[in-house]
Each structure stands twice: as C-alpha cells, then as structure tokens.
Amino acid sequence: EKNNKQNEKGLRFCFEIISPNNRPYMLQACGPAEYRMWVDSIRTCLEKQLSLGNVPSDDMLLVSGMKKSARKTPSNNLSSTPSKVHETSEEGNNISRQSSAEREPPKPKPKNPAVKKILLANPFCADCGAKDPDWVSLNLGVVVCIDCSGVHRSLGVHVSKVRSVRLDDLSDPEGKLLLSIGNEKANKIWEAGVAHQSGWKRPTAEDTRATKENWIKSKYQWKGFIEYNDEDGDEKAREEKFSPDLYEAARRGDVEKAAEAIAKGAYVSWKNANEADKTALHICAISHPSQDGQPWRGIECAELLIQNGAKVDNRDKEHHSALDICLVSNGEEEMVTYLTSKTSSS
Image (cartoon, rainbow, N blue to C red; front, top):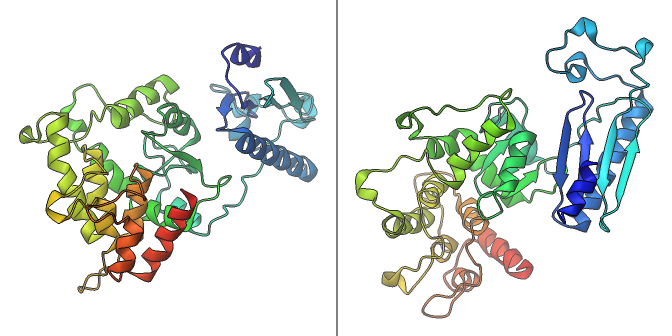
C-alpha cells in the first residue's frame, strides 16, 4: 500500500526495508544504477544471513516497550514471521520480497580502508548521538546514523551530500576530508551558538524522526546554531566578510577554518580582485607544506571546496584554471594528480 501511494506521487527508485523489529525504512536511490546496487546488496546480505542461520539478538528483535521475556523464539513461531523488502522498480512496479525468517543482514565491509579510521574517530551520530553511525555527509564532514541520514538527504545535495560508508565507494580524498573534519570539529562550528537559543537541545537516538528533523533543519539548513558576532551583519555582509577568510584558509590548507568560513556564509567561487581574480581553489592548488612540520592538508581543503560547489574549470584573470595554475606554478605533484582526476571527471 505504501508503494502504491509513493507511485501515485511519482517517486521512482524507492524501496522499503522492514527491520526485524518491524520498523520500516523507506529509501530512495538517486537513479537506476544506485537503486539496483542497493537492492542487490541487501538481497545478498539477506541470503548470506539465511544460509548462516543466525537469529538476531534480543535488542534487535524487541519492539519498543517489549520485555525480553516476551520475545518470540524459533519455538514460538519466530520463523513464521517473515521479514520483507518492498521495492519500487525503475518502471514503477511494486515488488514484495519475503524471507523465510526474520533475519538482520550483516553489515558489508567498507570498501575504503580509511572508513575504519573514520568510524573509530566518530563512534556516535553527529546529530542524535546514536551509536555506530555509518553514513556520512561529504560536504559537511560529519558521520550520522541511518535515521538522521534520511533527514540529511531530504534537505537536498546543496545542503548535505549523503553517502553510506559501507555500500558506497568513498574516494581517498573524500576519506581524508572526513578524517580532517569529523563530528567533534564540525559540531564546534554548527552548534557553537546553541546555548544562546532557548528551548533547543540536541535530540537523542530515541527521539522521534520529527524531533530529529527539526534539529537537523535548524542546524544545517537555517544555520540557526552557528555563533555570529553582531558585526557579522546580514547574509550579504557575511558573504563579503567570510569569503576572504575562506580564501586565506585555502592558502594555508586549513580545512577546519575553511569549513567554518563556508558554514558562516562564504562564497566558494569568490574571486580575489587583488590576486588576478583567483578563487579559493586556485590558491589552494598552489599551496605547499608549511615549514613548521605541520601536515599539509591541501588535498583535503580542495576536496572540501569542490564538495561545496567550487568549479574546477573556473578561470582567473589570466584564464588559468586551478589545474593550469598548479602546473605553471610548480604545485605539489599530489595536487596535480588530484586536479587532473577532477578535471577529467567533470
């Protein structure tokens, strides 16, 4: 029935997962290839779990408010209560799949070795504190749980670019960016002013989706918890103030300061008239490791800029792209390789 309603609304590439505790998750893929990848991966995991014959743990099977003693075991008809995956195919047709028993598929292993470090560094969701999150927002640099990831996705890619660290392929630069920012640093930016907002507190994992949605929208879409000074002014004034800050952060390869400037309203494609109309990506492309031994974060900074809308083909006054200026200015070899890959894929 849910799928019929979704089809009437014109939504495509949707599928619904019903977990062992009968909690539904309605998900929508970005296109037919991603849709098929997700559905095939889920089916493969279900088949492996069924072949192993493992029964999910008590905590996974408990419905809210149910005591452990009330849990159904295989002897009182657990196997007769099938789990389901409802799909809306590319053509919009409904398909209902049932397994012979309620099973929780094992989580696929991450494809990028950096993912393990990312998950260890971020053991709790950035927005609700749920344990073991395995979804990320690439442009925000945060790790979130599946519930919060659904809200992030609903905001649009101009606000949050959501990926699964287990089912999606994270590139090396994306992995480095997530390690450079992470939940703790990001929340110091996005929640710095929450104490000044009366009536607001971060939701918990047990709160409703509506509560989490209100928090996430206020945090990222409306930027309601960022700490501004009185002299920061309105939106236009903030763009004028923080765009040069972003430019200087990119010059130094300072990922954290660059992320803060973007959050506060910097325009990623702002051109510095005092330096031949170079953008932050231009100046980042010719950055070099500092002399004080600090690690160079040029690639991470460039990835942050591109994830937030910077164009690799933007030209300065001398008609140089970021790659051009990197080549003619003897930029780091790693940056040349990185920008070449971005240019060829754009």
